[in-house]
Image (cartoon, rainbow, N blue to C red; front, side, top):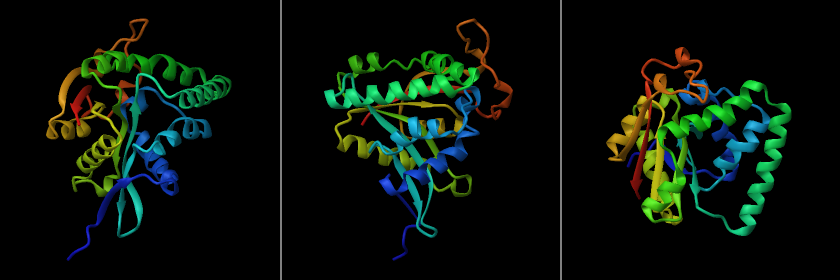
Amino acid sequence: MATERYRVVPVTPDRVQEVMAVMGHFYTVEPWSIICPLRRTFLWDQGWIAPLAGSGYTVMVIDTETDKVVGCRLGDVNMPYDPLVTAVWKWIRATIVSILFWLFASTEEREAVYERLPCLFSNAGYDKTRFFERFATDRILSDTFLCVDPEHRGHGLGERLIVESERLAKSKGCTHGVSIGTGVYSQRIFRKLNYDFEKEVRYDEIRQADRSPLPRLDKIPPEHKSLILYSRAL
């Protein structure tokens, strides 16, 4: 019997750096990262990507012919409250990261994190409190990135990543998933998997707090016109 070329499995500690490398390549063409540019720095990697990659809710695709990571779905669990130890650790880490960010980030990067990202989430209707109340749950899977190396697309790997991350999250007690499709490719997969449509907003219709349009819209690949919020019971 032929061996399956691609395996979709949870990220293990020894693969976190590979997942981060895959994310780094994808980051440059992702619509929201074009709008909210952040330099690939130690702070960016260790303060955000590495914790999510090792969260226990992130899955990866391994090409068995090369034993390389060629795709991932970066996920995390949202809860209305954390156990005390977890909450304290998250607060300490967030405080340290925030201080370092303010010290070393550029003005544009601070605007991206504290103004543009919240603007995108708000316009998409992403409100965690509302979802906890509506779904009557205390654990929701939230994905941040879905990416597959261009050389390995066309094999249904994006769909497999979503299905496996859902299975993993469900085994850990998550009852629902909430995702934002920022580009046409992920949106196509969410529709195929019968995710419930929540809200769609075009990038060129979003206005910031000062009523100005989002920057760098001309840099976004033309096929990506809007972001769409989806949800689904797992």
